Image (cartoon, rainbow over all chains, first blue to last red; front, side, top):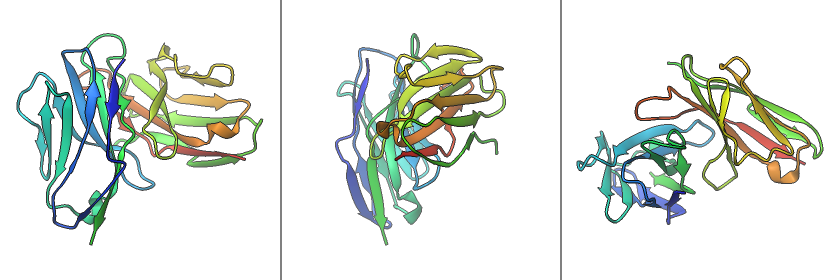
Length: 117
Length: 114
């Protein structure tokens, strides 16, 4: 079974600054996907960024980028130029590439990010 | 833009009562999930459907919870009888079932059991 750990229950950042959210995971799989999802207050969860484990290049999506360290089983999210709309819960999630449960996501407990004006 | 629809958004019930949640996934999405999210926690999978078939319900408390997706489209999650510990957000998600496996979530149904 896979586990996902987010060690920062809450974080805050000044508007326009950069913040990094941490995530570690444990798996015996060699191929898998990692995701960061954002859950704004009272709104649905949406995908922020996705990383395929077989790709060495770190994924980027506009102001969002990841630092994927496969050997260390670490997958951090960096948010640059933080905006008030980035205030949300952020969840790290894992999905095996193949096999049983290959379409299921295992989530961490989340990090509550507050962007301060 | 297509979205996953869920109802009701909020439900308050007394313990021992029955409650039901409905989910309509994005059209064409073969895979449907029900997750439970306790306040301050990450979502935990309750049940996964592939079309009308249950793929995984290993974490579903089957003595009180049931889920169905009769025609392989919309789905209902039922709790009977509700207990205080069932208070949570119930999230429905869908995915095409192929590709990178991104899940698309509904806004959720928040249940409060008194």
